[in-house]
Image 1 (cartoon, rainbow, N blue to C red):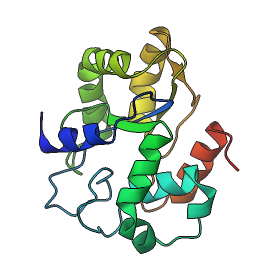
Image 2: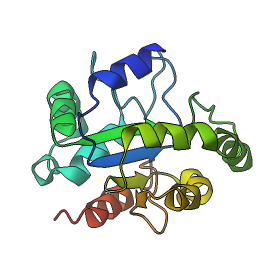
Image 3: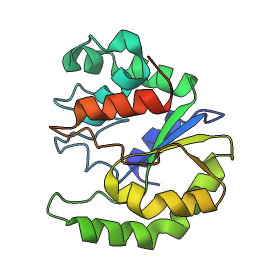
Length: 179
């Protein structure tokens, strides 16, 4: 098990109520990235997936700045875990920015058997599943539904990149009926 998966396991709830499935894990800890969700050992600039997920789930976090959320990241991650939230990725390896949409989708298709096995080990038919990013929705939504899982989104939940942060927060909040 690699270091990121070991770190993620530390934040795995005993019962997962909501399972988020993003596209791919972050690059190594030494690389600045907008997707370092479970890494709390140091404050990171622009950890968009983490900060926007917390803002979507917790109304009291919405007025916090990214640096404020990052400064309290460990506490937020503990709360995320205690509330039954968990995040995994469809792929096991980080994808370079240069990878095309078609290349990413092909890798997700190839990873589907493993992803379905992973989801079966984490979720029940009652677990709410939210798929993040078009590549994951396009490739994995129907196979997960066909396997009996409760995929909430019928449409894209945008990755909270530079331009989609508000849309991501609104869609996640609406799917979980959080106001």
